[in-house]
Image 1 (cartoon, one colour):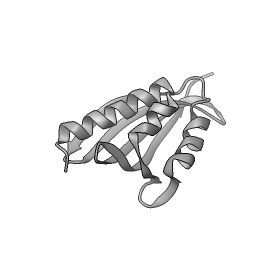
Image 2 (cartoon, one colour):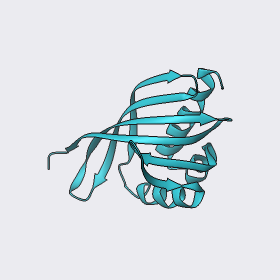
Image 3 (tube, helix red, strand yellow):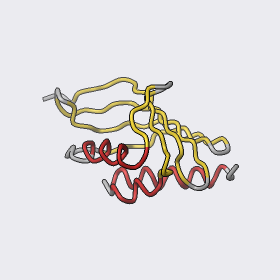
Image 4 (cartoon, helix red, strand yellow):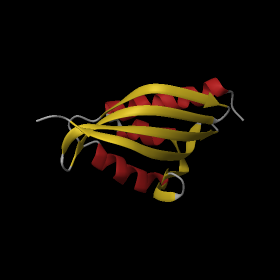
Amino acid sequence: MPPASDAAVVVQRQLEAYNARDLDALLGIYASDAQLFEHPHTLLARGPAELRARFAVRFQEPNLHAHLMQRIVSGATVIDHERVTRTFPEGPGTVELVMIYEVQDGRISRAWSIAGAKTLFAS
């Protein structure tokens, strides 16, 4: 099990690649058999091809940005509370997210998202 600081470094690199919309850097942080879930067990993507397809669509949003509000690290598990600015079908706004990352061998092996409140920007 990696030290907590190692897991936090991996997840921070993931956040930075996400905000930079650097798809190749982002995918390099995930394990080759990584799985992304909507908590608790709805599989959203597995492996590099499915992760690439999912993130490529998201990276087309002009205002996409994840703001880290709080991070908790326990061994190989990192829990981030984020406010993500997005362009939803009904317009731009933010969504509160809790992201849970499991880090193994320096890469994210599994991740879970828990969506909270969505707020649309006033027009």
